[in-house]
Each structure stands twice: as C-alpha cells, then as structure tokens.
Image (cartoon, rainbow, N blue to C red):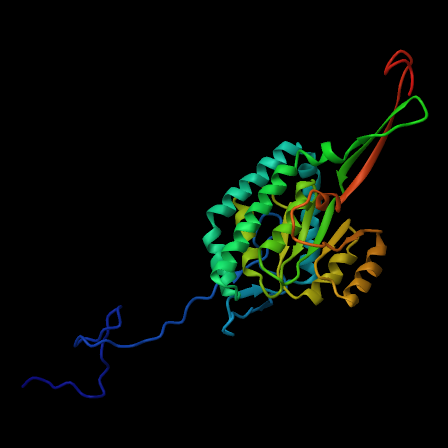
Length: 314
C-alpha cells in the first residue's frame, strides 16, 4: 500500500518559491543593505569607532548603513591630506585641469546612479536630473579654471625703487570642508572643486542627511587620476565633527556651508589656535573668485640691475 502524505509534513519548494505540487509560495526577501564607508588617503576604511547610522528615505525607511566618523577619523584624514599637499600643489596647473576634467567625464558616465540616490533622498526625478547635470557642468567649469585664474588675478605691481614686484596666488594647504544638507551632490561639488583646483587638499564632512551621493562621488575619485589624499571624505554627525575639524592645528582653512550663529562662534573661536581662515560660501554658482577663498598671496621683490629692464628702474 502506498504511503499517504501527512498534513504536517513539510512541502519542499524550489528556488523560485514554487512548491512541489506547482503552487506558488509567497515569500518576502530581505534586501542586503549597503554599507557606505569613509574615504581617506585614496582608500575606503571603516570608521575606527565602529559606529554607524541609517539615513532615512522619504518614506521613512532606512537607506543604508553609513559610517559615523569620530575625532580619530578626522585626525587620520588630515594626516592623509597633509601628505598629499606637496605633490598636488607641485603639479602643473594644466595637469590639475586634465585630472579634474577626467573626473567630470566619469561623473557623466555614472549620472544615472547619482540621480537614483538623490531620488532615494527625496528629490523628484526631474529635480535630481537637473541637479546632477548642474553638478557635472560646475565641475567642468572649475577644471577649465585650473590654469587660468593665475593669469587673471596675479599682477606685476608698480614700485618706487629699482625692483620688479610680482604678486601670485598659492594654495593655502589643507582645507576642512563642512557640507550642509540642502542637497547631496551640487553643494559637494561647489565646495570641493574650487579648493582642489587651486592646488589645496581637503578633508570633507559630507551632508549628514544626504550622504549617499557624497560617498558615490568618492568612488569616482578613487578610480580616477586624482592622487590619494587630495580629497578625503567622512560621514557622520555635524555636531560631532565640526569642532575637531576646525580646531586641528594642521588645517589651514575651513569652508563651512550654512553655519548657524552658534557654529560661527565655535568656528571663529577655535580658528584662532593657528589663525586659520574661515570661509562661509555664499552660493553654488560658478565663479573663479571661489578659488581665491583658499589661496594665499605671495609677493616677490626682484632687484633690477643697471642696464636691464629699461635702464635701471621705473
């Protein structure tokens, strides 16, 4: 006699969720949530604190596991940025422009991913597409200024003695950048591009609420020609990272978007430790003057010998 199948016996199902008798079995799969790491020295370490947070989508669901960076991460990022200053500032302006242009090409190739992440953060589809296009155009704009701003703003100064007097712009060094939360990509580009176009390196704290495009942006940088350490990016809470960044003695300037009155007090108090410059960017519009915000003016005097330069003086 053939055995009958007990009602309590388990029913085997294949990989498509169908039972042995052909009926569909409904199951809900739990998606694998991406972990977004920080970017220091051209690599993607996890935060040393081991902490993370989960930014929320427009529907309130968590989007990803995002590193919650610490003071130690700030120090590591500054060390990496300082180590890259000499080689980056020492490159020809034309070569820096080539590297920035290549990054713009790669941003264009991954524009669909940036649009998707902005939509996850709550932007409308058309709004996200417009922001990504504007961010790419802005980046290319600053790539073109790399070898031109010196010619526009440097000068030969009049003197009352037998000297040539030249004023030229030089990078200030390591720049700390604090993003706000208005958007995830356009603001980031508007803050980073003029800083590195002028030969500086930077330590960036991404938008706390919209970090996904920022980390994806560093994935572009990691596969471009940009040397490691020129751009370093951390994710986390603004109120935990702002003070360690501005108080660091090896940071030469800080650029802080949408600083509150309380934050301005902290910034201008802590900046006195090494007389670092504090910059409050006014807009996300393209302007070569934004490059000058993190530049120092170097003036050189050169004597004119008799018989040179038109007879020995002005």
